[in-house]
Length: 107
Image (cartoon, rainbow, N blue to C red; front, side, top):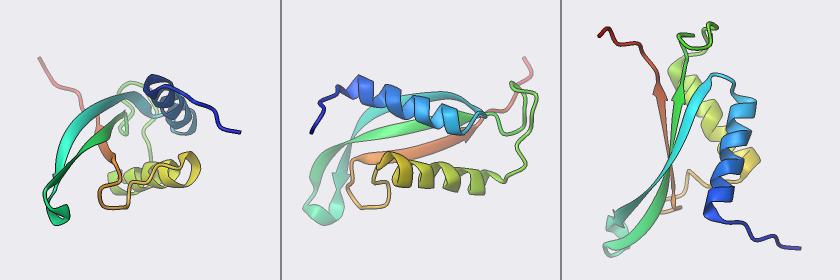
């Protein structure tokens, strides 16, 4: 049985799953962008970029994360690939992941 969902519903599900698994995630934004695949005869595709904003140092949550940025990004990557089923590894897959660490700025 197949269930049809809209793009916004898909994004909401991904966001809820990520925030449920990684409480240090403060915000998730989805952005569409056009990308040219050079090795595929300059074919242009639309990619969904997942921008994940984390509070690794505990500025918002009060609880610092005891993982390095690199290992934390890898955990999010593997979660999206293995649990959610998003193909981030394949060339031209249509998905891209960006993980950012929040840092306070003095104004």
